[in-house]
Image (cartoon, rainbow, N blue to C red; front, side, top):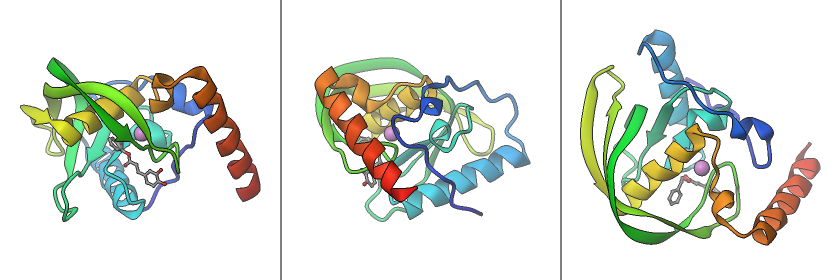
Length: 167
Ligand code: QAP
Ligand code: CO
């Protein structure tokens, strides 16, 4: 297993649209396991394949306290969404920034799991928010897109400066 490099805003590769997975084969399971390792190492609660520059519809999430309940979503779809919630969100691709974002509080969704089996489930609160945040990554959308242009530009400048210092 390996910890993967995470792309950071405003990297244009974060804007790519992910394609649906056709087969859950050994190579995809290796990607999933590397994404989980990357998620736990960060540490984070959610990571989309787009963030590690793999443009396939794969998400890993763990919102559990003990960090022992990995959730793998391949080709996720939201069937229904209701109620509104405003949560302070972070993003591994926007390190150091937490901002309020409106999302649906409850969702019903379908996806394929790590064993290649389709399933449907419901999620609420933090898990529901996290699934919506990660699904946005798969269509090249970022949490900063929900902020005012002024805030987004400020975050962009600060991160670019930070990235230049690291390089
Ligand atoms: C998305 O984000 C999320 O800035 C997942 O310095 C987050 O795991 C959805 C992280 C919150 C809903 C609520 C962020 C780690 C992790 C940082 C993450 C950082 C270190 C973010
Ligand atoms: Co994110």
